[in-house]
Image (cartoon, rainbow, N blue to C red; front, side, top):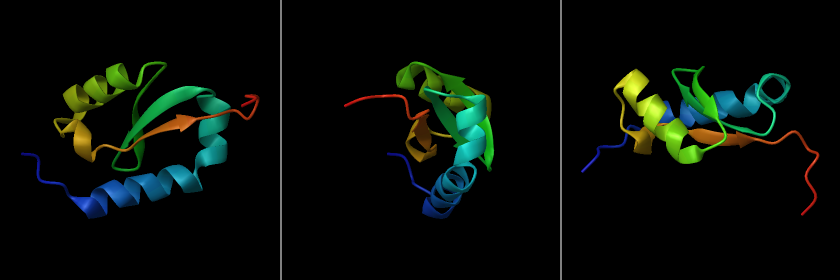
Length: 76
């Protein structure tokens, strides 16, 4: 079982919200994984991003925030 470190997770998630406009410019319509307030993986597949982030950081994917950076051009 993975022990979750909520403070790191929530700090990184908060960082993503604060820097969302910058993320939209750099990574429109991509999944982005964030660790230690840095983007560590980017792509179109959430599964691949989680795996890449886990490999790069050594952290379990369950404690790595992954957000979809939507450019705003989608119609639902």
